[in-house]
Length: 109
Length: 109
Length: 109
Length: 109
Image (cartoon, rainbow over all chains, first blue to last red; front, side):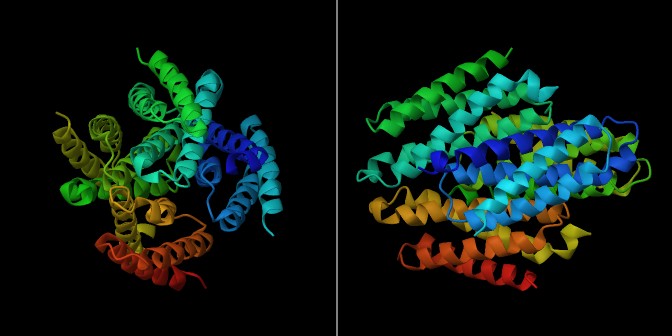
């Protein structure tokens, strides 16, 4: 059963989506929002891709490989951008993105 | 912080989305798939609405009331349909939908 | 057939989603991005809700009323925020949002 | 501007999403719904992937290549399954999927 087989990936995707959206809303409230523009943009991309992949896994999608590659790339990009910023939400998001990228890459054969 | 304030609702929404998508893929593989058509249709509606509400809550959406009403209705409908069928995945989905509808209704003031 | 019955609403929802996402990416590149923070946030909310409603209509969702109410509210809010800003993308987005809110309200009985 | 640069792809993605969701709801009402199970499943996958790609293009996603590859594959699979069935909605969906797969493949460098 798909949602059991992929239970740990689904959890990591969920945590990453949450971290990205929390970083997104927090960045929009920072004083230096101008410097956070790319972080905001990649947070949304990454959150949406993680959420899409997460739901796809619960319905046994035939596109695990393609989605894992896409998601790994989005997580790497978002994690690298977040890592540049000192805000606590950015550092936490960078960590969640790295963890998620690692999990996604394990799915790519 | 939105994703902490709504942590328990987010968890229930996630469980309901998973139960609906598992019921959806399982119904499509049943021998009596014809009798499951409405269940399949409502499973998808409910899963998509739960997933949408779940992600919205993690980004501090201003539309909690409207989304909670929509989601409560979709969960009630899907839960009632699922409850009619003896398949284990339908019974489990009915239970997840009832729980989620209850949580959503608590959010509606 | 759902996608024919709702063809004109689907088109307006699509135009509004496009205008919101164009405004969103443009706001993130403006010099005064700090003043655009609420516009960015509501652009994403509105784009996502329009896209969700649009796809739901093409699959004959039973939740037209609830989705139309949600979408009308998101479009009103986003349109009012966009209307405050002189950027061309904001003014165009405000217009698309107003048009979409009007169409959604017609669906609410 | 992303939504102008990709205007023709966005239109084809939209038509494919609509055809898939129309085929999906129609298949669920057919007498031979059991034989349509895989068609229903792939219709949903393809509709969701097209809708996701379509919205991503309107917000200037950095993941055009990856999404185009994913979408081309989903469209090929769905189109091949639909082509096996005589229902008018299946034949129309097969045609929309082929057209969309072709457009997506043009984006893959």
